[in-house]
Length: 91
Image (cartoon, one colour):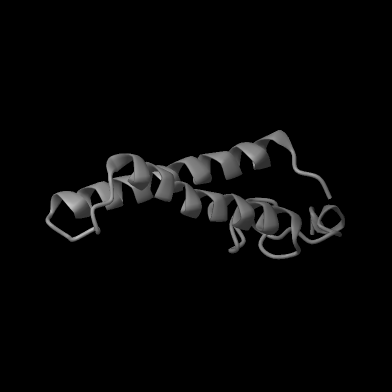
């Protein structure tokens, strides 16, 4: 099974937003006085990449594996349509 363009863009979008959310979370935690062990902003930016990379792996797995549907989500996003739906269309 291969990924199409929409599936790849879905995974990239999720990874980018995971990175941004992680970076902003670390940045706001350090700004609120939470002891971050002297982590610089550059290190926080690098640390934000790890959850984003995990997000890419999870998205690729969910897209290609028999879980969920053809989106990057574990949960089914689309309604299951039976194979013989056309036969029962006008019943």
